[in-house]
Image (cartoon, rainbow, N blue to C red):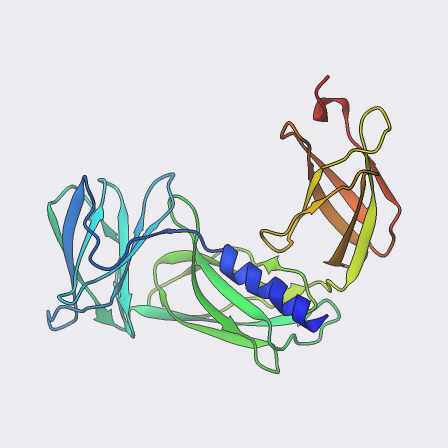
Length: 284
């Protein structure tokens, strides 16, 4: 069971950060803007991270080349952050249409996020995975990952200041949980509220019925707060079974063959939940 639990956590870590990653030295076909990242003394910095936030689009992430250079497709209004080791952008850089950019990093411009992960019974959760996400104009971007110590404590250093974040965590036998959003001011070490995880060592099963009361074959079931990428399908008798779910209650999303989605609550610890799909879920 422990192996399955850690595989679940690994899947969560691998699938919850989405961004367009530009290989080092990438030259974009159109709208490519050349830039350089330099340190406090003006010396170019290779291998620095450059993050571009675009409206209604996934963020772009690139890495500077040997001369501290990068080239990315930018649009006026895009915002840029960069960091390297203990150096970072002191303010968010807004692109205004220029043909080239010089981004200067400074010491003391990165911050630290600290917090604790506890179980619903109040005990610390050791060895939980924790990931911090920065909110951008488009989709959110996963940055640093850490794991908790024996006291359930974690520390995520070298994150950008003047930005909004949230934290997600998942334990070996606990469900994934997301914190509230929080803003990090310059030169700040922020201590977040404890993140409480629900036990996810129970099971839930049942049957999905169509509007006519007959078993529905092939319904795709996903879980709220569950591990990304894991789905369940009903068999020919309309039945399904899920393991590693939260205790007491499980919220699910049921997708039919035409793509309509129905939400339902299940009781954990039983295998005879019954969900009947509404008329709109199935084509006439």
